[in-house]
Image (tube, rainbow, N blue to C red; front, side):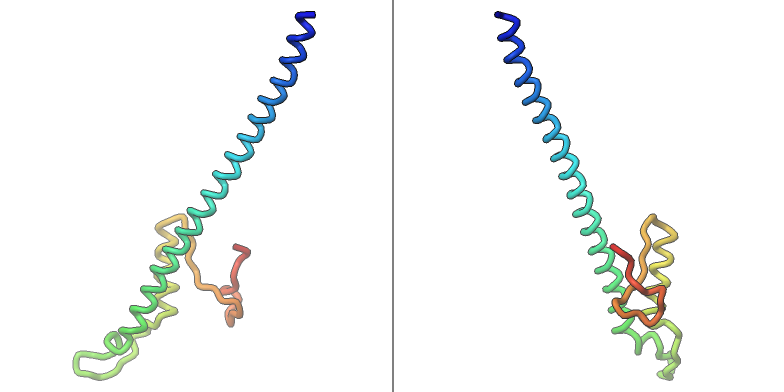
Length: 116
């Protein structure tokens, strides 16, 4: 009778503990994946804002960049898209990140967005 009682207590307890352990592992994995995605999204946002700020700076200073010391306007070839693309390429060579400009309706196929 004692072994039967032990078995009736041990089996449900083992099942309950095993289920709780599985639920804990699944929820931990889900939370870690969610936190990793949030971190990547925040980093992507910060990088995009820095690139946009650089783009805006070049745009605002076009006249200053392209005006010679004597006041003559001479286009230097540093417009926003060239600077943004060049800075993105330099940044990508120095890091594991890839920065590129995309458009929902690109004129250039290499500017089409990826799945992300």
